[in-house]
Length: 400
Image (cartoon, rainbow, N blue to C red):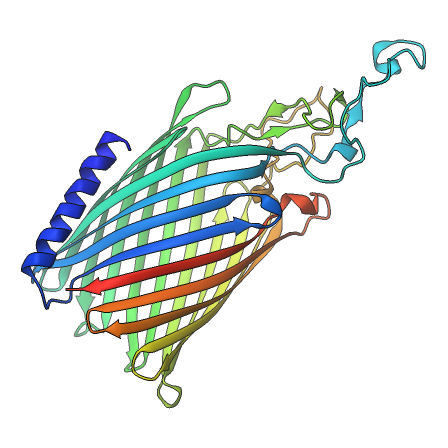
């Protein structure tokens, strides 16, 4: 574990134990959660352990922190198109008479319509610490965060301000965050990226049982924005190995601006002892990607201690301006290009069900399942590029 992450986590853990011992009976809490993300066909598997705490230190100060550890392994697309789209080396390419190339020059299944995969393994960990300082109607929340993996390091700072109005029925929110990142590029060199995000929004209580949220976010990123492991193949570049095609690394713009609008409405329905939450998110960036996301969740109280929550989420996005599954001409390469299927035109569906059980006054546990489905819409990118996955979660919360 990286030394800086150890220091933050040790502080969080020690502080949490101290307050458990000295503040019994308060509404503070500590949580643990485990999540398993498993893609179909033995692709990517991610196991996540997370721990957090939330402490009300005084009427004017609330402190919370989180530590997350992810183990990632499995097969992921290289970015190359399926082998049946390649041009394979021929006698004509070499100016030789037909039949000159010896058998076995071309290897692998040249008729395969599945995208090539590569095995990967990594360990990612992050820690964050934030405190909310309150003075009457004014609330200031500074935050520090740190994340690292083998080829990526990120340090984040943030400051949020909230103002209560209208007898706390309205809250105005302003926020800023900066992420200073370093990543290893395709040449093995460390490259820098800086991202700033600005948020403005409000929360509004429309009635005793109705709650509205609206946020707008603007973000700007500058620096190394490539995925260093994505290669792209040109249609007219001769290949000899269907399993390991030769290509060139992707090239994205060094700047990106993003614009995000988000709104949600929560309505409690007394006769049903439940509440409905719906949200809509509109995303657009200067890569040319526009995305729409709609989410619905129902929270049903069962008896005195159970809450059952089915949910559904649908998202659809357009392709980036520089997305290609395969380059048409190796001799006329565009300024920017990427074969990353996550920049293509696609849609996703997520179905979920979560159960929360208040076992005791001081203890609750929860378990959940989600099914994630990703489908391409451009009729160009191979269907095999898009993953579907099962997501399992289990967690516990202790109040003290």
